[in-house]
Length: 252
Length: 326
Image 1 (cartoon, each protein chain N blue to C red):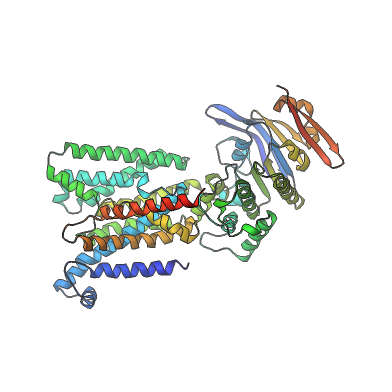
Image 2 (tube, each protein chain N blue to C red):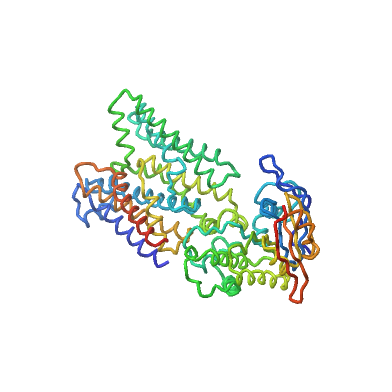
């Protein structure tokens, strides 16, 4: 069973090919890291897959009606926008928007989903604080909790760990890994190859709008690819404590 | 919801006060009974033909400006947004100015509000065409600025070329905004637009709440950005167009009221809509009572007073905000 199916997806912005012929299938219970240098098209690929920007090709998510898609996938954009000083609890409850009717108020089930998301991201102490007054890293965790509260089989997040401290980076990656264990899938763009190698079940490598490699971390993070795509050398080893990938030098 | 009851009470008290305060010096009991009796006494005429439409218009326009200000701020995610931003008040004023200049306004009583409504319609059509079905909030702001600038330039041109100094001064006074000497005809003219606009904006609460997280996140939560933008623009245009048509340009209500009430609703844009409607009605009723009390014989204009009260209030809020943010 797949939660997202992209075939020959291309995006052209201002007559420039930003994404070219990307085909990707995301199965149940996968935690996929989307990696690639700046400008490789990671964000554009995710936004096109969601149907937020025009594209050519097929995306199973973009083909759905809005309300149905909101039940199928949750999206956490890179811009961590919180426009108004609402409480953390209120903000996480926004994730229930697709489930709560236009004139209905949240049910006990909605509240328990919000509680669970808040607990998962360790936000219990700040439930009643204004989300705009939190630190950048805390805001990121609140927004992840919001996406979790949407309770969809698939979560897409654009650089969810950027700006988090090491402990919260690891626990966020573990959150997605635990979702995968429960049969929920996620596609997460990342710049930290170490975290990607260690936690993701599968990596998708992009460069200049094309999909370069797709597979398990050891298969994707080869020295040749890292040199060619990122222009770096790295130390990669399957150790007793799991796979370790440590970038070393710039070689271009 | 603890906020609703005090606001409703406030509007109620101010509405009653608006009915009972005026130069005719009608007593409280006398006035209220004259309102509900069908006789043709002077008191009954004053109450029904002068004070009632004035108070009703203050409630309608105040509530409309409040709710459209809240919707505009919520949609643009900017506390400095106001209903006039999409250029509707400017283009409505242009329509009215043309009606005064050509003499149509003196020839036929409803020519001025009708021309203002036509101007507002033209303005909103241009804005919707410019902001497009796939536009963002930024294109909407730019389109609004363009339409406002164009309408402002054309209004100045009409004033500039006006051969008649009386028409020019009439235009200037009209643009200050007032509720004096309005009749029930004005109420009936504005009411359908106010109801349509209010209905459109009332339905945007859920979408505006989701917009707290930005356009992308809101769309991914099942909110249609195109529909939301259209509802906000058309709803605001109906309200501001009708309001400007019958009362002239009344500033600061749509800017200040949502700003003052935001902390009281926990920052939630959806709840702010209702609160701002009540708050706007209260503010405009109070301002319209004040122009009758402060300088009763000098015809102080309502728009002048709201700006005089609104601007310092706004400054105060900015200073307070500067203190709490690092």
